[in-house]
Length: 230
Image (tube, rainbow, N blue to C red; front, side, top):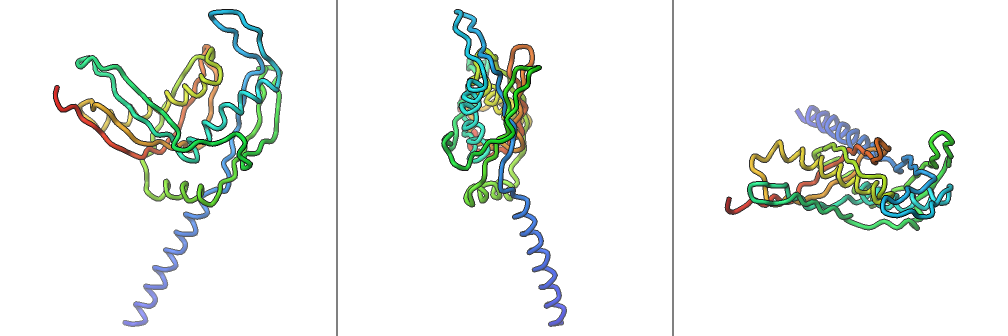
């Protein structure tokens, strides 16, 4: 009987050790993705301005958007969402802010494989971010607690330039949150809070004069506040 208990303990320990190693190895040391931006600025609808162009213009635009994306991947975006309610004359409201800011001067950011596409007048490059041990722990935590995975598509006008890319991401998150909660809440709440984390490679493109992005996100639920009176 004692030998059986020892064998069971060894089997259990081996399985546990294997699962632990698998969980650790599934966390990558880097986050790598491709970014691009047009080499010509968008002319204003309200007034004609001198157009900026060239790789330097594209690089500056990429570096404006990059911290926003890394904030969502490394630390997440907090949100406050109020669904629209025609009966109560409530307009939809969505607030989207980073949990922690990231600086474009972060030494853990590196770039490679720059390329100019003559056919589309775009400058692109690959971005690699090397995780710190703390950031790897955060990634491991999100996987271990089995957070719901949600998806959403967002669009915004290219006239808004880099702000349009950020708005498209925000709208994608809002649509993902709205779609998820509409399946689990019967009556519209007054307010929903929580945090979403970017998972997978962020992608965006232009279609019919709009930036379009489709995001995969982990959702960490916060609070749901109901209306007290109709």
